[in-house]
Image (cartoon, rainbow over all chains, first blue to last red; front, side, top):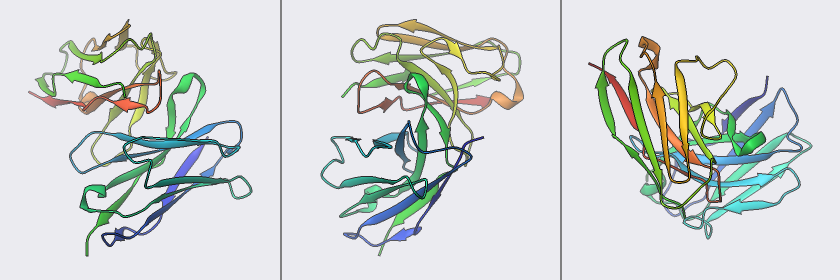
Length: 117
Length: 107
């Protein structure tokens, strides 16, 4: 059974860079796309972007100038960096696998990141 | 970007009720429409993909229909464990986009 676990600081200061890691276990990171999604408190889901195991990326245009997603196949991990954060970036951040038929079939439990000084 | 609009944003229903949630896309997305269930403090769970295909292990009281721009999620007989928020998501073109969610509450 594939499992995903997000990790990283729960508090980031405004204007700094948010950095999260997603560790995949129970399966290989190869041959799939992997997404980052976020959910502000009490609001809906927003797709941030995805990465293929080869390193090819797609980003949401609304965040593209601030986002970098990378993959480390040797560690079975993907990473998210979001620069110049503001309070509007406060959210639960999820990583998820894009399975067959372009569905988000496995999700991490999510990690709350608060942007505050 | 393709905008996804769900209705209603919330509803109150009783155990045993039939519940219908609609999702409309701002342009045709064929059948590239997925439904997720989310309980408080938990990650979303995939229920239905490709508009009407039930994920293995999901109870048959859940069903999906539609194509093009209009889609429906139906719960034929609401059970206590079904009280949750349901979100649609298009996977026709990136950026993937979600509906704002429909919260199903106990009446």
